[in-house]
Length: 175
Image (cartoon, rainbow, N blue to C red):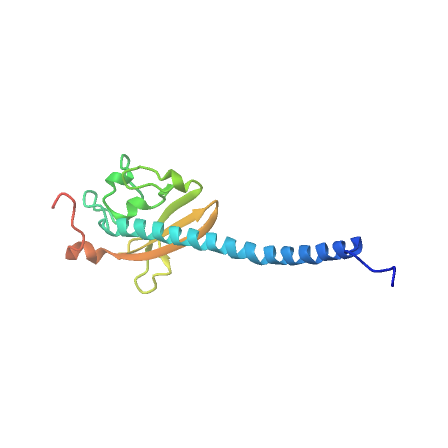
């Protein structure tokens, strides 16, 4: 009979097994972490897109130029206007909210770290990508949503003065 019969595993075999298992686990974690992170990025982009759409739709319900001032060159809100009283598109120029808020002013604190901002510019009718220093009858509204300083969504829409003249915008007072 052989007296050198083995009954178990050696320390070297145990260490080698642990090394192989650890390499497999590290590789798996390296594969799973980006997948989990991409799911979060996708969810954030969906929220950002919804926030840009919501504000763009709100802006689209406003007059092209103030029905009170009738000054197509003016950009930004009047002296005592707030978002709840904005009556024309360019009132939104320079508007920003962190966290994003409703038109009533109520903030969504679940979105802390998020910012929604608006830029309104006059653009050339022949080339809406080119800004104009004076009124051309066409404005480009750009709504940008970012989270922690990273832009997640941007939406640009064009608005024409003709819409007011044709009656596409109906005032809340029924005028």
